[in-house]
Amino acid sequence: MTALAQAQCEACRADAPKVSDEELAELIREIPDWNIEVRGDHMELERVFLFRNFRHALAFTNAVGAIAEEVGHHPALLTEWGKVTVTWWSHEMRGLHRNDFIMAARTDQVASNAEGRK
Image (tube, rainbow, N blue to C red; front, side, top):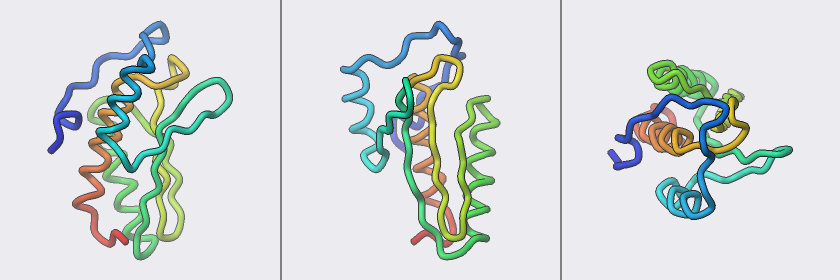
């Protein structure tokens, strides 16, 4: 388990500070398989996970949903046959918060144990 995945998520409000450029550069190195996507006026973290079939993709989606519920921070999840796209960003503040990087790292942990990964 990485240090980032073990970090605690904090309550996030609309006026919470977004990650700085320096923090962004540091944190993205800890989750190298994630991409930073700019959508409209904000950034998001996104990664595509590939699976052998829909059943495995759906099980992974549910596992990510479970860790999201534990902390009350939820991603966008697009589940398709053999593929799940996970997108993290802080909706309230319209951008990236440290919590998004923590949850991306935790998602990687879930993926490392997921059945049927390609």
